[in-house]
Length: 138
Image 1: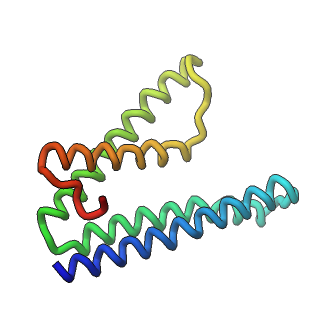
Image 2: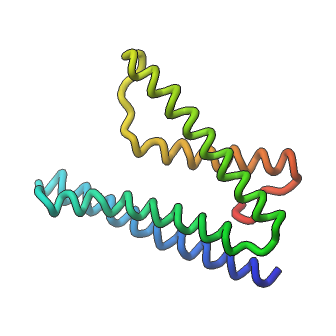
């Protein structure tokens, strides 16, 4: 559908902008805070930008699901995100208890987003196996 093609284009534009801001701000924050020893409120502001860029990516995904007009594709997108969230939360809670009992090393909290991203592939694969389609984002 032409309408959903426009939705997909807007989604990829939003994600592309968010990820560009993420990469640039992460590199800048790393250089300025670690190498140039910037501190104080400026360091906090620099450190917040990459995380907020990832929040922008989550916003793009939410908008994508809201704007889709094809109910089947919307269902696949929602299902994919539910599987990804369940996967990430499961890994987080199991790792957390292993960490609590000093059986594994500490993991920085932002790694859960990486696990969630892997979970989006698990969700898309599950959609492909059970419904014959990867969905709109694959």
